[in-house]
Length: 392
Ligand code: 3PG
Ligand code: MG
Image (cartoon, rainbow, N blue to C red; front, top):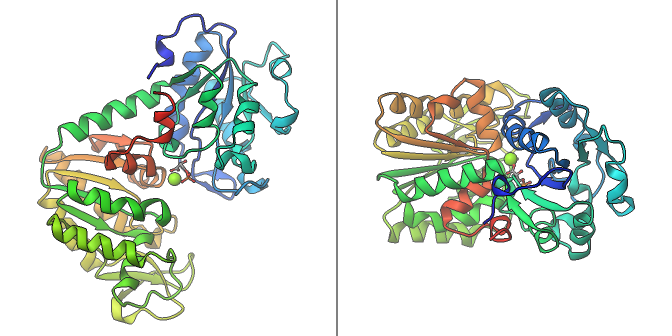
């Protein structure tokens, strides 16, 4: 891979810069800015080199349609303040844009394309769309490690049409994860949570041979609970995962990997409800499982106590409502306790996991924090990520 930091003569070059500014938003307000802060080095670097920068990012999953709730406007405004420079947000269709016109005003050094996932071609890794995008710049830089597991046009296919380079944050993430995977100490525990079940459930089986313990919490745990014959009420669940889960348990047995999942839960009738502790056999039809219960927390703490390395991606519950943040906080606190006595190596990854850690000022207490969630897990799986492969 070639990195942009090793390239000369970037002055006046029009750079298409793919970033992952998929930050958590609540009613249009950014609730965690870490991913924005992490891209400041590359933007400031390119500004200093006098390049012209066209930022490409997605936010959320608009499924190829315009959606004003998923505009990048609040992120653009936040970034403007941080770099102390006006950033033009381009809402015009990419198909009507011309390279010469984007930076016509000499004052525009940084411009921002509206959510790239408003185009259905993006997730299809469409060739013509990638070509059209590529026509808007002279070089392409991927500084979005956290979405490099997506074979999408602005991450993957675009590299076929422009000289393409890795960015600063991408390099940091890859180096740190390489180090971790080569120097890891056993017993290793991987905690997987969050709500993106479809992204993660297929990965678990491949992680099993590498880990001593896999702890499944968050949305995905509902699939396991249901597979084991428990009621999960109205909780989120992915369809048609039975054979995947069956495989997970069989593979775990072969490799002596312990799979841990909730023994008790916190439920609510809606996302905004107060929490109620329930045993698994007590969950009713109109309950939503939104966090792990106290018994499960104790069990997880015990596993962390006996681990040398802990990797964590995805919150244990719906932490956006403080009533359901306890599971995630308790996991974080236990890891920190072990870290403080230098008896563990810990890594956390993913936008929501970072948001949890920021809420309790815990980021500094982990050995490494990756902006990536799904990409982080797929990297651990040993896969070459499509966005990285495209640069190699
Ligand atoms: C992430 O938050 O993990 C990345 O931005 C990728 O988002 P996605 O899971 O919607 O592709
Ligand atoms: Mg995310």
